[in-house]
Every structure is written in structure tokens, then in C-alpha cells.
Amino acid sequence: MEMKFRDIVQCPKCRFKFSKSYSRVTSCKGCPQSAGQCQMIRCPKCSHEFAG
Image (cartoon, rainbow, N blue to C red; front, top):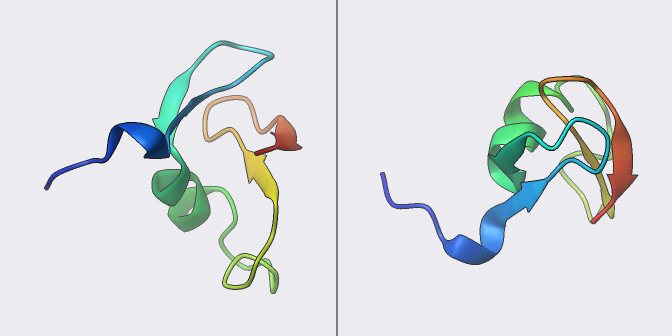
């Protein structure tokens, strides 16, 4: 599986690096806005939510 560099973000709280798509699948599961144009990103490690 190839990850695009622009898809990688770093959590400002815990500094964990992850892909936006991984976050959407794991951390945003169940949120009705996760499939839309949500501008927020949730860290899969510490659950901190930040603008992305």
C-alpha cells in the first residue's frame, strides 16, 4: 500500500505521525461527518482533535 506524503500529519499534542486516511478509519469511526468534508483530524494515539 502506497501512502502519499501529503497525507501524513503530526499531532500537535503527542507528536504522533499518521495518515489522515488512517485517522478517518480508526478515530472517526461512527461520526457522520467523517465521510464528508470534515476539516478536523483526530489523533489515533491520544484522541486530540485539531484542524487539518
